[in-house]
Amino acid sequence: MGADAAKLLSVVTPAFNEAENLPVFYKRLCDALKGAEFDWEWIVVDDHSKDRTFAVLQELSSQDARVRGLRFTRNFGAHSAVRCGIEESRGQCTAVMAVDLQDPPELLPELVAQWKSGAKVVWASRRSRPGETRMTLGFSSLYYFLMRRLVGLRELPPTGADFFVIDRAVVAALSQFRESNLSLFALIAWMGFPSATLPYDKEPRVRGRSGWSLEKKLKLAIDSITSFTYLPIRLISYVGFLCAFLGFVYAGAITVRGFLGKGWPEGWASLMVVLLVMGGIQMLMMGLLGEYLWRTLEESRQRPRYLIETRSEGPKEAPAPRPEETRTTNA
Image (tube, rainbow, N blue to C red):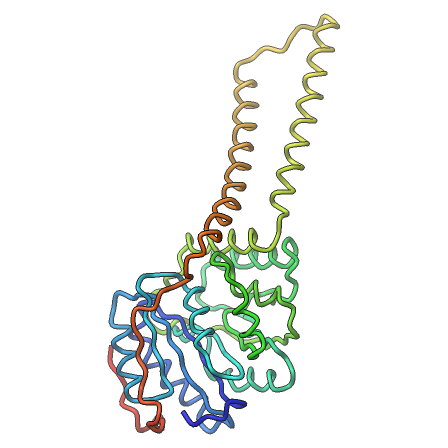
């Protein structure tokens, strides 16, 4: 690319069924970084899309040597795609952002400016999220509250972040972690590198539908909590002790009542309530222990976090065309 390594920005983007958004994002990325004092590259990781996502990437990379595309052999998830892109990046700083344009590329120069000021991690903190449902906003607020207060990752922005810029030192540190089931955002916050925050207003999605389902959100929440704290297991001990204590107290009260001649308590309904409540608590505890146990088994297998099916790169010697000279690719 002929880039000065000390000035190179790598933009990493996971993509799943984003054929329509890729050309629009590319155009806005070129416009946003036009005239910038640093060279840049764009790495797109196709998480085994079912549409023309990778075909569009091949067309873009054939026109612009700064664009690189990778396609997974199957769907490994957005966080695995981000990890792959980060590991493939070459820049002194790396930006991670989605291709749906809810996170505007026009913020990149400001994020890079804060990185140049000394921050190793620059979070783009969401100030508003137009178009999101109350359920989505509520789930997000609860998640970041738990991560900051329960898990102790206070470096995470209170309102959440969907994209960020990290220094090469953070990229190198990430390569030391081999876990598969975790939140990349939480891991970066846990590292403790000096960070800064840039508030911004999230924009509505340009085209298509988000693949970030409720099931994936719940898995992310469980992965985030089980990867960084043992507090749920400690709570199991507390709840078990409390239930045992209340059981002994109740047994003692019944015994005293019987010896005082006030009769023994009767009632099938009350007995079933106690059994169902206790059984439910026990099943919940077993499920929580199972989540920890499964993740231990998953990590012990040491399977690769992702597999790359194919790559798309333009000729490295070819000069990068100016945005106005580049033909827009139609999905």
